[in-house]
Image 1 (cartoon, rainbow, N blue to C red):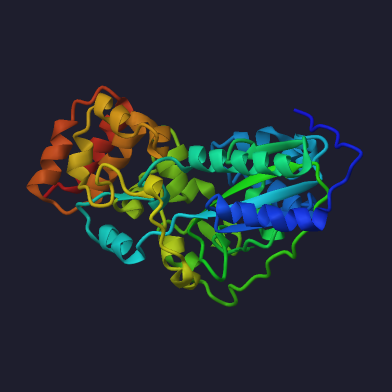
Image 2: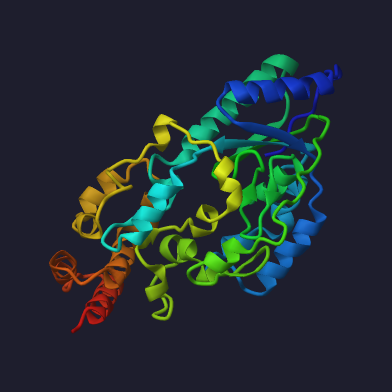
Length: 357
């Protein structure tokens, strides 16, 4: 979709940029910045990452060529990108408690509540509509993980934070527990200063990674990443990696939980982000008992739906294999021993083997 041509009457772009940031706060975003569309260094980094095959089976990462790093190639006419951040900060102590309890299930903090995509997209569209009220019709496109966009690089350039060694964006005043969204616009807005890096010599995120997926600063091997393995990866999980997954059944937060900058993260009580279905305290055995119908019902409007029922069971089977040997754990695994899904059944057998006396 090509952006529209601006009218002859040009607005005061400096004043407009200030107004956009004010409106972003009014719509519930905690941060907002504006960047240009130059991503040359990030494009080179992306090309190298793809050339090494570190994206695993995520072929969509390479499918769009350089459109991911060239906003005006994706949406012709784009001149600036408005980036916003929406906090979803959670209680880090509670997260560590769950990880330490082998009979409980760990779900990445962003996925405990409703899927953030719809909420952010609605707010971004409302922001775009208000900009239209200020300047009249203008070319724009709203994105929330919905297209090939280098959102972290754009947000860094807009001053929202720097890309940490774990590849997540970090705001020195708010940590890394926030979602990103963008509006591509054909407005020649003034740009903000890019964020500077403040990781220093800290290597905690690299050291804590259960599968050592962060192979070097700013270098993530998705093929070893628990988030990739439990959400994106289809089929069997490498047996070498299964014991390292622990009780993480959907995503992983260790690299963020250990980050010192998250002591500044803001706790949020956004209703959409509150834990549903007791996912912040549920046991593996309880979740393993869900039927497919129950899974679909309980994950409606949730990011977890993305994994599908088969992967959900596969992931829990792995976690049960890593859990303490208790009657509940063994009974849960036995209940799925004849599961029709070959992949699930294979992981159940592996898990039972882990509990063999």
